[in-house]
Image (cartoon, rainbow, N blue to C red; front, top):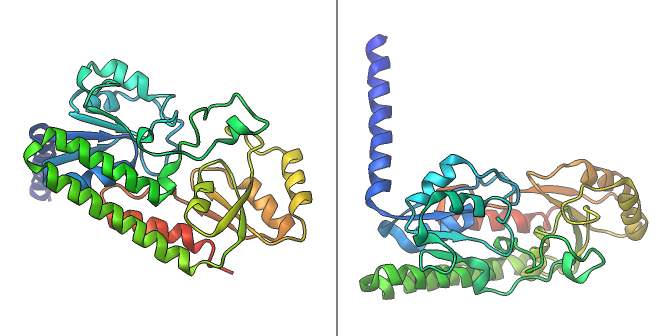
Length: 299
């Protein structure tokens, strides 16, 4: 029994040392989200080792600047963030304490995905709730595969700067990845009955109307970042009474408001992940797209 224990411990230590050695000897890419990690892994292939900071089931708005994040960024060759304010609550503290000037804003080792695509206008800018956090636009564009295809192109070009001999191949991989994302989005859109309306918790899953033939008509939050209030939920009930629709919210968001609308309106509710599992590559993101689209196929 004791022999088996020590053998297992030795194997675990060996595995950790191997992982650490691989990370130390590779071109190190750190991404804030698992969608960005997927893109970097698919495009960089064997040239890169990727670390994702935010767990897929966490709200990337609301993380702590953990020492492990600083350690990863300190040794990174390339830092990729979503930008547009998504990580503004914690990433500046991480980079500020990481003491790695190569990944500072404006350096080739720093890529802000939002710089390479347009964004949905945020209701915090154009609506009655002006002055809230998303002044650059809605930062949850990882829910839109077309926009992520543009980000893939940018990542391919940026990795090409570090690997000039493989630059053409890296850009080709990025283009192929973007094509797969666009093709899958088009195939899913063809399966969806058009003009279905839906309410989302936060302005994140509303990006689904950018590539599916569906219509976002409201938010459970009265103002982004504030929990649903009874008065706001009652207004939604009065507004959509006798209509058909769906309620979508992220898996990490509270169910209570969605459950109230489900009971009052009879609309089905769906809790959906916003990010793919870490390490499952493109297949994981395509499966995530399937989950998003399936919420409009259930009756």
